[in-house]
Image (cartoon, rainbow, N blue to C red):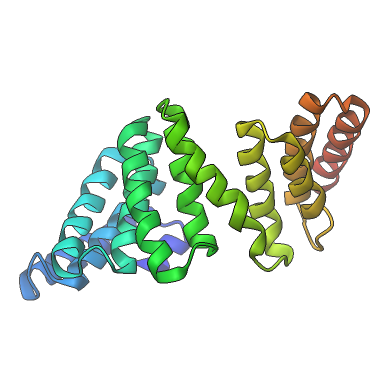
Length: 231
């Protein structure tokens, strides 16, 4: 099933995963840990297809099993919470998305630590959805968490996109100077590829409220040049 997904053969992947779920439910039971893995995989597949309602159902079933068998101190439980939170966010259910992100943050923090990229991904999710739900004071807790820890990770080329996303988070919060620092740092990293165009466009957006208009214009021009070069 996973190979078919990687090859974008969604129909085949769906058929294989559905068959695997039938087999596991028959021979292992509907509340076995391996059954929850297949449920989660089906949720992932359906989410990539845009079938959010069904994806949400599979994630919830996987989460129910993991909470019952593994409790709320297991990484797989946190993974199900985070996946469900993302689908809820895509459905604009920001209140429930925030709650699920917050629960996943608590587990990831205990298991992986406060500065893990996985933990910080859920921290950003909690922050986004708390702001959208008007819970600004609570959002501030996660903003301060993110600001305190996001820069403690290794800065290799794959980190550039994470820095860019961090910049957008700080920009949305109105911390434009920190956002600017994120983009400046990300653009110093090697082998950015097509990501450089995206990063420079986002950087331009951050520079506007700082009234750095010539620099913003330059970033847009350089982003366009990269886009034209790669086709």
